[in-house]
Image (cartoon, rainbow, N blue to C red; front, side, top):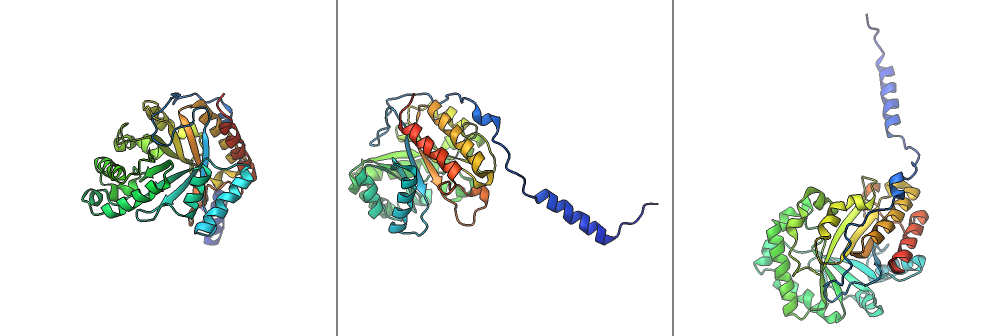
Length: 332
């Protein structure tokens, strides 16, 4: 006969088991994989045809998106200035996000362009088919005129991460996206915005799935290739995370900008620092990479696996500071 266990005892055992499963474990030491010498994959050294934003010949530009504490021009200015002060240098590239109808050439855009930084406009598109129907021509032309007004080189990262599954309803298909890219670029040419270098930027995951390359508009349409790559739910070296992209980009005669990269808070300060030191080695091992931009942000309502701010994490930020120094100091 099997003895009957009281329900109260069962409840205690179950609760204890659940607590053991969800308990926080000590931060493990960085993996040995992060101490190896990465192999070069994207090894073209140029010179590259990269449009008005000429790729640097002997170094890597370092930049970022820095999320403001308070939205607006003053908040943006303070956010960037604060991180630059801690970094001990100005950013070469400043990423900025704009909705489809949100204006470029704001106060801070002007300030950053005037001081010599490259502003990268991450510009969300509209529905590709409605764009091709001409319904948004006024919006596109107005934005093109603002870009032309800058008169200095600007990066246009048109509808970045177009390969994301949650954008399929507005991208429709790779063919529609490519047609919308060409349509928009033609209008920019007509409006005299010839100071824009066009940056094509899917996700690293899109290359793992195999669907990102279909969105490529062609070497004659793209000035810089790009990828967004994160150690979020997986703690893996960056060259593994973007390995398939690097293999693809190595076949293109274009410089690379890593448009967004980040390592999640989930992994703790020491592991984040180790990941950043490894990223430095990877960027240096792939001379086709000529610019990188960190995503210094904890997006609202996201879990720790999608929080990437490092400017308040001294061990990780110290490693980023070293990255900026090594990359801007030139290639070996």
